[in-house]
Length: 183
Image (cartoon, rainbow, N blue to C red; front, side):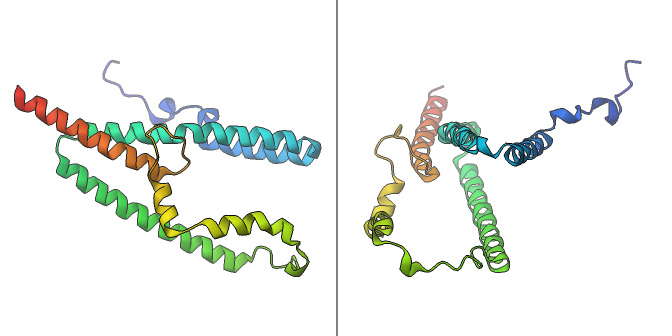
């Protein structure tokens, strides 16, 4: 019948195509490989680091393209501002909840409680690189690290991407407005 709609059971995708199930299966498989063949840990660690680097390489580009496309498709700059404020509030609320959950888990689980490490026995040579890095960090240096040197400089920080795409989007919006006025 042409007017008949498919039931929900017929239109469902197979279970093996569900991304959350695939991720869960990958975690179980990784734990199983680690338990059965622990000698493969260094190779698996290299593979995991490579995977994380490949994802991190594209994160900035994906964020840039998504935000530019989102802002460019909005016709009014006022709407962009409202969406940006809502996104900022959402980000702050979710980040606050994540911090609260993290602090609660640290206090509840107490990682490192049973280790009984005597910090007096740690050599100064082992701590020197960390102390040097900590002494070089300043508020001004942190603020300067937020703004990239070039639009294409590699950066793991998402804030640097935002500094690049906001002027780009504003210029795109101004040129679209100028073209609409000339028509």
